[in-house]
Image (cartoon, rainbow, N blue to C red; front, side, top):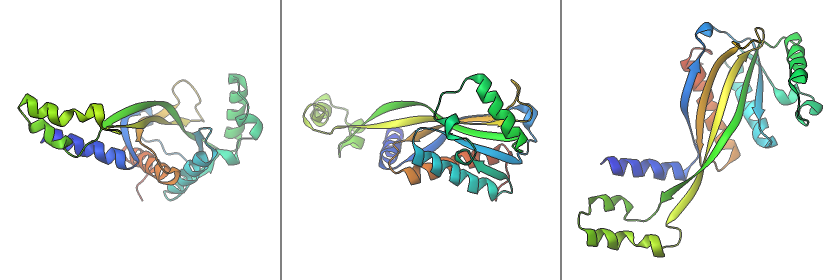
Length: 210
């Protein structure tokens, strides 16, 4: 039964995009943190994905009474199109603080893994075959069946929130890791990811539920 359940999970993961949180941490010093004006940053070279992410997260935060602004409306092209040194970034942080931002919520892709699942109509039944001959007969398609293996990608993303007012080594408020499984369409993938982030922030009581 456990094997059958595992197979169902794999099939589901292969059939659609899925975002799931794998880890989450809240700074004990920020248990009662209440962000007022948040800069949302989607750190990616995929312009459409970045725009969708920042737009949807902005809407989700504003529904909870939090002012939020997309980074593409704040950062100048000269800042995002060129690699910045730490001094230039600190100057930008000062500019953000002067503009009233007290919080930054940033998301970035940390890595990608290629996974493999096994296909075949009789896959879920093989666990129950106890005789070697029968098992080999059913499994030998691994040699002959084209497409027996199906490859898919798992993207590892990280979202973190920083207190801009403090801006010290202790200014990290919250961080969480997510696995994005087999993304297909940008719109549905971004929605799943934003929903996962919002749920995490609600669980840590950083933002209110609607």
